[in-house]
Image 1 (cartoon, rainbow, N blue to C red):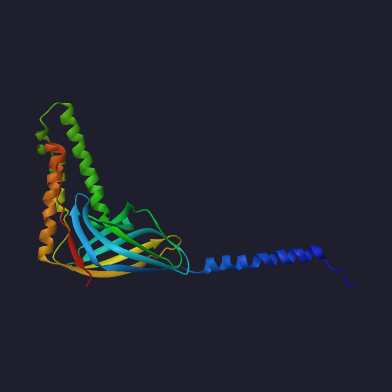
Image 2 (cartoon, helix red, strand yellow; image 1 turned 60 degrees about the vertical axis):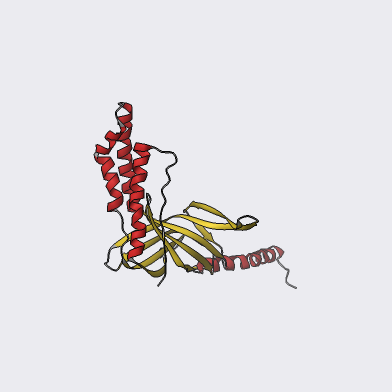
Length: 253
């Protein structure tokens, strides 16, 4: 009778024990992630010292495997073919809601800077996401720094602070808010690109909306709010100054 090699048998059994794990590992590597994107029918548009703003309520569902969202961009195109690129800047989620005797339902929300969102497999994540124009923020940062430099020089030389209004950086910053207003009457298309880890091609989601003449007049009022905010920050410095930002809510077409 042939003698059994127990050492080889144990080695084979050990290898077989690892087989399900290896199959699962290979299967996970070969499985492609899929991301479903659902947008709420209502959109919120505005214009502040942060520039043009588009806020959207979005839901994400990961299928096949978990997904790590690392960036979301929007290509905003007017029917005149004027195009702007907006990127996510912050997101907000509702943690819970409490009923109070005096004020009724009170939602508790968490707001944070947009860095990444992890979507577990077969789960649904809802976020309110704010999109802003990177180009606007970069130019605003340049003008703000130049104005600050002149402001500090005037203070150090004990000059009248109103002298700042005669400087080019201050006036460029003041005019910047008027010249950078992008919203127009007409139809807009939104091509959203959601970039995830380990995948070069983004997932896309497309919507359309329309702005009326009344919508534009409502948001345009914020141009003066921006200019008043700058003037108060440097000249008047009233602690109780609080701009009343005006927003427009529109719906997907």
